[in-house]
Length: 195
Image (cartoon, rainbow, N blue to C red; front, side, top):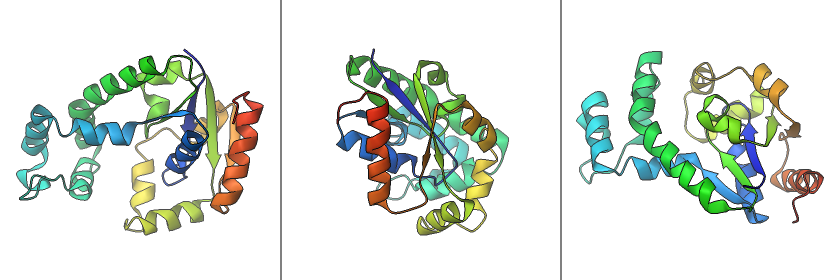
């Protein structure tokens, strides 16, 4: 297995954007959110989610109302644990399959709770995204989140100080996407990834 990059940072710090930029430069993007979206299509998981969080999390067409599920699932530690217990085993299986299929190709692993997951030990290089809280709040607002939602979700994760201290590299992400792309290029070159 080749290089596996793990992205760390606060909520709305741009981890998915950095992962997409890396994918554009040839890395395999293993996107846990996309894999979770696939996982909740499994009939057994859908039934379990409806039983735990209410039938109304699925609309009349069967589509998952992700914001309603998030509101209920992130309401407390116990409901968050319930969601994780229902969905994470299938997501972990899919991540494992993706990593195995990568061979020696460099991978960027984009997972919200990667730092606390079993895959943390597979990461060969950690990158922490440094972003001002105001910028993260603005990005969360662009997603339609309530003003306190970013901070509320962040309380259920490892502290930013711990994530930053564990990182091998820090990537600043307060500016424009073009500037971020240049910084990603420089960091990949430093890591020996041909771009």
